[in-house]
Length: 327
Length: 85
Image (cartoon, rainbow over all chains, first blue to last red):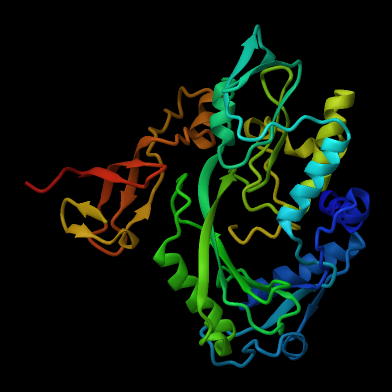
C-alpha cells in the first residue's frame, strides 16, 4: 500500500513534471459489496487504509445511491448491494497520455527510444548479461531491464530465465457516448465488472481475465454477453445503450497476482514484469524504484518483497491495495 | 468449438481450462527446486501447446487437447481416461 501511495503522489504532479496533460481525474472509486463476507473484508481494508493515512471508508446503500443514483440498491437483484468501500482520491487517467508524456520527457533528457524494433536475442556470457540483439542491430549493455508486458515470459526465455508467468487476455468494451452522469468508478468483485465514464461520455466496461491463457487479442461474444448482463444488474437503466467496440489486452499473471521486480539469476538482467491486473497506478513508482536499483545496485525497500526468489521461499505477496478485478 | 470424444462438437464455453497438466513430482524424492517448478513455473508458449480441459457442462470428462495460444485454434482432443470405443 505504501508502494501505491507513493505512486499516487507521483501521479498528482505528473502533468506538471512532464509538462503534459495526462487527464488525471481523481473522481472517487467505489467498490461494491454484495455479501456479508465482502462487507467484512471491506471494513478491514478501510481500517488498514486509515492506518496508512489513506482516505477510504465503508458507506451504506443510501450513501451509494446518493453518489450514483443509477445504481440499483434495492433488494431485487440476485446480488443486492449491501455497502461499498469509497476511496475519494481514486480515479482514472488517460493511459496514452501518460505514455506519450513519459516518452517526450525521456526523449528530452537524451534517452533513445527505438520503436518498431523487435528484440531477437539476449546475449549472456558466464552468467552475466552482455547485450541485446534486435532486428535492427545489436546493442551492448551491462544492464538490461525486461519491462515488457504480455510477452515478458518469452523475452525472459531469450535470456534463459524461467519465470512463473502465464499470459491471459483481459477484455474491455466501451459504449456510445452519453451525457455525463457517472462521476465515480464503480467496481463489483462479486459480479466481476467495473464501470466508469470517460470525459468523452463513453462508458467503459471491464471484467475479469479470460478463463484460459492465450496471446490472442480478439474479443469474444461470451465476454460481451456476461459483462452486459452484470452491468445491467447494477444499472438497469443502461439497457438501451449500444456497445461501440471491444478489445483485449494481454495480462502477465503471476501465482500471487503481484508483479516481479528486481534481479534474476542472470547478473545484470533485471525484470519489472508480471503486472497482470495489478494496476496502471503503480507505473510511476515502478519506474522510480527500478531506476534506483539500476543506479545504486541496491534493491529499494519499497520493492524488495517483489523479488523473483519469493516463489522458491514461499513468501507470496497478497497486496490489498491492488484493484485487480481478476483476483 | 471443441470436439469432445464423447459428446461431439460443442461450444467452447461448455469447457473449462484445467492447466498444462504437468506430472506431479514424487513427494518422497522431489527437491524443493522441483516443487517450485511444478507449482509455479509455466511454459507459457505463444505457439502450440498440449493442455488439460474439462467438459464442464457436458459429460465432465477431462480432455487432453492441443491449442495454439495465439490463434486459439484447437486440434486433437482426447479423453484422458481413453476415448469411447
